[in-house]
Length: 405
Image: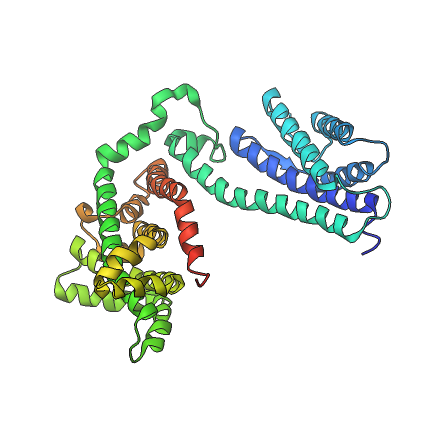
């Protein structure tokens, strides 16, 4: 370990790691954008990254000069076709410039920020560990962004393609802006030919009602577990999450048989009955932790002032619990919006389809693939926007119940 703390060795290892990471990232990103074959060369990436990383530990080279030298070196290797990313002869000038700027600029910034505190000779443990943590932080950000962004990008770009374009080049995930409004033909056809607007309304209605029904049962149940004393309280509290942990696939057949015998299958009312069953346990578990964290003295003061228990809940507990209620509502809404198994099993009438059931109906050899992807985008974007808009409430609500007041 003491050998690894030397500035030249640590710089070489971190340089090689950053070059391999960025070569793969830039190659994949550019390939998705331009649709051409862009391949990382891991051997060259390892060599170039290690050499440049060792060079950054040379004395008398300031951070600014070092970044310029790194950018120039990487750019030259890419442009001359011998660097960490190999481009085909058919690759255009703009693609080459995009690869060059992305790899050279990214490597210069990443490596410079990582090794900025390393000395040419031996370094103490704190400086070395700080450099490693900076690399792991950057690598984690790139990796998790890629696994989230790439599938969404493929889905979005495919929804803009015609069937002829997909057959001509299945790996082309770029966008042709010259098509103008024709890019959105698949979305227009979804609403005019496949009744996707009705699916959207059905999902919104079912999700909102599921939230309201879940809160109506979860709030008094969670409050009773958190505040009241009754026989079997501990067993009930522990059993809440165990109910939620039962796989839905185990209950699928009994639910299907029961709903078929009672005439509830293929109806919105049946879905509204079964969805809260899957969401109430997790809402109970989340809310009881928050209610336990609220100071009991505030509620006791309300009781001493003549309020009933229900009035205390309505006038004191619920206003103090708005962050938790917001987070639970958002979580339940996402569960109901994205639920597929029960909707697929219980709904056969297209007029009753939810979004997930409607998207499953698009997965057919008779329907162009771009309609399936457009439906997936429509199902994903609203819930993503809702989550990003209310994320701070969800984070506050989830964290608040973890600290007992």
